[in-house]
Amino acid sequence: MIVEKKFLAKLKDFGLNSYESKVWAALLSRGVSTAGELSDIANVPRSRSYDVLESLEKKGFVVMKIGKPIKYIAVPPTEVIERVKKRIQKDAVEEEKILEELKDSEILNELTALHSQGIETQDPSELTGSIRGRDNITDHLEYQIKQAKESVVLVTTEQGLGRKTESLLKQIKKAKERGVKVTIAAPLSDKTRKSEDTFSGIATMKDTKKNARYCIVDGTHVTMMLTNDADVHPSYDLAVWMQSPYLAKNLLSSF
Image 1 (cartoon, rainbow, N blue to C red):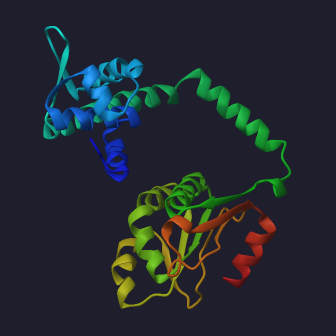
Image 2 (tube, helix red, strand yellow; image 1 turned 180 degrees about the vertical axis):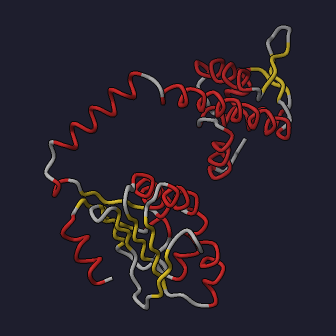
């Protein structure tokens, strides 16, 4: 059986490895088959075929037919999707429960203390880092705003204001409730009116013609985007983060 590599690669979305994808595709083409037959069709070593089929059985992709020789029956793909979805949901609930339990655990307290002590011994100039990818940058900004105690200054583009309305609104609201002063600057226009209305009463909005992208938290933490969001693919968006009161002061004075 000849199956395109692209097709087999897509089967990884079902949570299957290379051998599992090959064997399941082979079984789907036969409906019912033995491990030996599937090994030949899928070009998978016979020594591995039983382990692979056992794994597929546990995941709900195949059913073992009682009798001799042992045969395997393919579960319809539509049913497999439902089973995979249920398994993912179950795993997510269990992982969330574990993470919630970790919040109040002794090990988290120890890890937090270890991190705090490590940060305190570092020269502020060493606390710099690069962040690649727009999703990762958003996660970083969300974390910075979450840690804010006094002020947040967010300078962005017209397009960026719309994205931040969706991704950072929740944390900006919480910062406002903590008494943090939030200022957002962007090129304001009819296109940004909806975002302006959304941030009304939460943040001070300022109109700027500068095509800049940066965030300053508590006059110390600076996150500066190095690319033009209109010209770069989100995956290649790049930012640098640094703990630099000096740079923050200069940016704020020009702002």
